[in-house]
Amino acid sequence: MDSLQKSMLEKIADLHEVPEGAYNIRSNGALTARNTTANIDIVTKKDKPGIDIIIKPGTKNESVHIPVILSESGLKDMVYNDFYIGDDADVVIVAGCGIHNCGVDTSEHDGIHTFFVGKNARVKYVEKHYGEGDGTGERILNPTTVIHIDDGGYMEMETTQIKGVDSTKRDTEADLKDGATLVIKEKIMTHGKQTAETNFTVDLNGRDSSANVISRSVAKGSSKQIFNSNIRGNNQCYGHTECDAILMDDGHVNAIPSLEANNLDASLIHEAAIGKIAGEQLIKLMTLGLTEQEAEEQIINGFMK
Image (cartoon, rainbow, N blue to C red; front, side, top):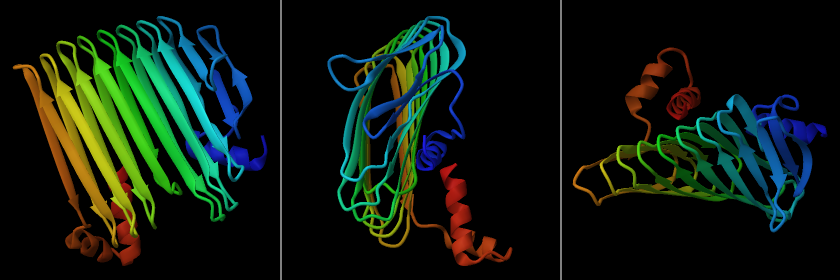
């Protein structure tokens, strides 16, 4: 890998070198590097672009890295990745896409990730999106995530997009069986004329299943964000969805959390808060010697953690 690819890997996957364990690195629409382990196999799909990640039942303390890099202006990349997590496994999956566009044409990556989480399996899925480059071409990322969690399964999904993406539409659908749990933590920052739309739909089909969907975002400049979240309680279950957003400059945020209780024992909660940075917060930090800009940065960094 060249220095640009290494720099992008550091930003989207916190990788300073080729990772240990299983990995699949994709660059400009082609496979760059791959490694499998005794418990984790990665297989190229034959009918469409993408891979199958197969994790054996009982696999513990292993990780999979599947970053994607685009550095060619005008390239449009599409992948279909399926994850099969065996019963009782406990793994970490690190994904993400970085686009470096120094040209005039639009660069775009669309990924459809489908997870099949086995019984009593645990998965932590980390996905970072990042854009850079001094070209006028747009950087577009449209991730779709489909999640199926079997009895007693657990999945935690952390998604982050804080810089350089001109347009994104993020769709997530999930269905949970008995005792299954889903936790989603989303962080988005937009600036300039960027747009971001996120859509979450969760079906709590199983008895004692639960979901917690939390989004934190900052809209700067004249950027626009839309947050849609729909949790459907179809059994005795617990669901919570929350959207907290900070507005700056002429930013715009539209938050639409919704709940559907289709069972008498469904317990569902939604929250939404949108507003500017409180003046007293800025004043307090500025009395400690920070400039107004430095104070804003400190508040935003704390909010987005």
